[in-house]
Image (cartoon, rainbow, N blue to C red; front, side, top):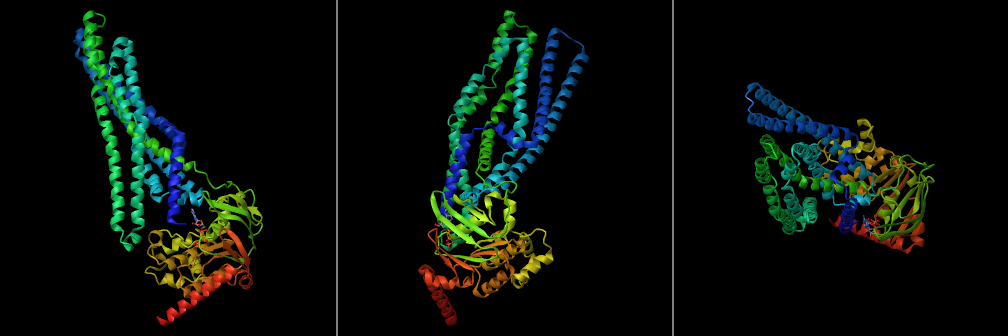
Length: 607
Ligand SMILES: Nc1ncnc2c1ncn2[C@@H]1O[C@H](COP(=O)(O)OP(=O)(O)OP(=O)(O)O)[C@@H](O)[C@H]1O
């Protein structure tokens, strides 16, 4: 697969993610409900505590109004005011207590929810076809799983209890004012239509602007990841400046998208923030007229003035959540879009299990996207036999091996193992049948021992060492700085390509699966070590079904069958000597290989 292929896949997948996002149009509370799972009741508890806290925060306003009313009515008993003052303090303490308990519950619940989302995402990736995962830029995926998911924490922890509570508070106050005087209740909301107009102005095109910031942030992320990942190539080809330029452009574009968004919002936002709280502008003069006219008592007038001061502030807080809610909704949309991607079609529990470890391909057609790469492959691989897949570069050998390893689903036809269609087996059951080593086998940033043990997590240290002896890499591992405890670095970066491959082979051997696929697994190994590995592999894979892809034909001449693939079709198959006679393509490849080998040896001799 080329970088261009992967980029094509990436942009296709991004679009797919965005399309799914548009299709859904779920709100933040739909998502919270969906992802909260078992924690829904905790969120409900947090809302209940927040609402009680809000009720407690309203009571001091009512008491304050009542004190003013009593003062005006001529109440001179100090105890009355002392009691109300103490009650105000008590309700204030209760308000803080309930708010703290609510926030504590919502934070704890949110951390669990975020942990859950991450586990679900990573679990989902393991059930997606390999191509789907490879098609997404790793920067984007990492960003969604780590940073973007993390950035939802403050929003989720606050939005659920506080949004609800801040909506409840003004509603309760409004109802209370209504019970005193309905005209004043309506007046206390007089600035809201202006706020609504300001908000509508502010949110006009905000979707597009927000989307733009998201796209530029993703681009910035991917450029950064690509720059770091490709640093070797960038240095080797002297591209540091142009690559830096790409990063600088992405950073500038990202900053501009945020600045544009902010500039578009600043005027309506300021208008809304200035005008909305000015409820006294209507309540004070018109209430005074009602009082002078005698349709509103002075004490009620004062009470309403005090209460209306507490009416708008929570609504402004609610409005201020809007950006955060849009952001969290968009992140949830991206997460949801990944979770909706089609998985490999595998049952939870196997419907059928292999009777032996022979492999049959029947009319297998497969392509990446629209382009068909394999055009109806029929192939029988005997149980316990050795099969080599050979052919020109790009002919489809790795694709075929990956279909057998169940990393993609065939577009047409079927792959059977021991008579059972692999789509009838659960991922776990089928995985137990196969060990697959590719040219670029990935090593985790752990010790050599832990990397090998991944083949069989229950293996003892002794068994790990034993398998390395059998697969011919014990000596080289013992030669490493800390032997089996050497940390291999991210992707095995502290080891040479050949060393990484040898550890990958030992890991596959550790798994002891009945079917072993080696896709150019010794391509980076020198001829001397390749011969050692070959001997060990044939020793360890005795009785197993072995499929090997190799460009060095001399390494596969003893195979039970050699399958020659050209342009996604099987050109010929047979043993080495048969193919030399019957297949011109194979003969040419063999002659080219022998010539290259001779030239190498001569070169080596001269050197
Ligand atoms: N993930 C992918 N997305 C799109 N196209 C791909 C992908 N992987 C492989 N291809 C294309 O499919 C075709 C077959 O590729 P494949 O890797 O199977 O060939 P191969 O015979 O193993 O080649 P090589 O010997 O060079 O490894 C090529 O044209 C390749 O560009």
